[in-house]
Length: 113
Image (cartoon, rainbow, N blue to C red; front, side, top):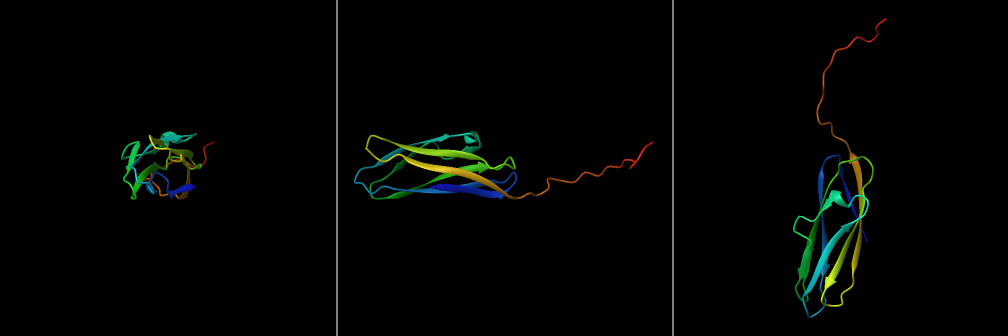
């Protein structure tokens, strides 16, 4: 699964990953961010997610677009205790537009001998 973060340059984008627990026991996942641009992504609510039996929960992933080039990372969710599947999500970014931070006025001669 791929989660795409699109927005303006310097914008912060938050995406939610919905996790379901079909079992009769609580699931505890540990989230790890890995990859070339992993340090640009964050998990504001922490790295541990607990899902009650037969319930679902959401996990926020936050990204601030700092560069024009696409950012890439992986979100790995590994379980503690129960033999639950390890979940992997590909995180990718794309700059949709650029808003100027400001304007500077300056004077200078066009040509000088």
